[in-house]
Length: 122
Image (tube, rainbow, N blue to C red):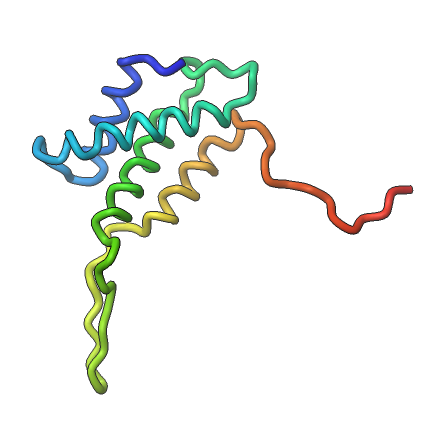
């Protein structure tokens, strides 16, 4: 189970990594809670959340990626007119942050998403 200390640490780290201010913390808090819950559920049974050194950083990256994905939802990332293309500034791709978080958590997580298909046994 996640502790209040882990939530506050995740919130502070995500805000620092994203360059966010006090006004952004209330939007970020539920995303940090969700990320901690989601990633904690992926841990192997013998790994306690408080004993996983990667959990807080992975949750911060996940929450930050979710925040940025929400901010970009519905908006155009770029547009072109003739030879001119204008792109919005990148703060890090949300999916990339999530992939990095899962990669960081991999040594502590259960194996998921792998199966053999069409492989004949001996």
